[in-house]
Length: 294
Image (cartoon, rainbow, N blue to C red; front, side):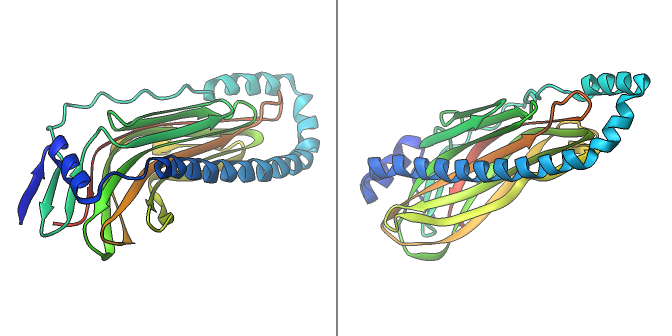
């Protein structure tokens, strides 16, 4: 095997020489399609939780009436509410990583790419924020339920040109992560969910050729009554790195766009006696991605 191109400029020039450039309008369409899908998912989730929470509140009303009559209990409820309402995490300081140069290896159709990547996208609703930075290969999410439902997603896209047919084309990404999540209930329910995904769009196929979720970091949790849950078992921050890998059928002489993206959603209730708190934060860095295998 021979390294056919080495360095960002030479790798980009080789791709353009082989396949021209990805269609500009089509690349905009891909980001819009992903955002549409995520927003529809968030709306379905919000509507479902509204029905469930309304039913649960009616069921617990008789018990609440008993607890409100006790002054000491009311004071404890107020103190616990402040104790369990936490702020978002801050990303950990990481040691400088060894510089990695993009390259294309002939004989294996192996492409290695590093930031800056080709596109970025994200959105949020409720008490949430989302930021994405294709230049540095990072994206971040942060949110709290704040008495309702909050949602956010963010991700990065990388284009690549398939030089030959491959029924099992490999895509892999190294993800460095920090995350924190928590939910706590005082009779009211709270929910906290998140996931990491790899989706790949084929420009010739004009559709998603891969939609794979369930990658780490991901979680799905809920509390009720007086439950308290969080990352690390005690709400502490978690950090590390994960190699994500997926396979899809690729056609030669075709451009593809791979998205690595994450979403988060949490909801809680802020009534004085019947309340819960939920929040999360995710900080993700993608130092490099690869297409193919050596």
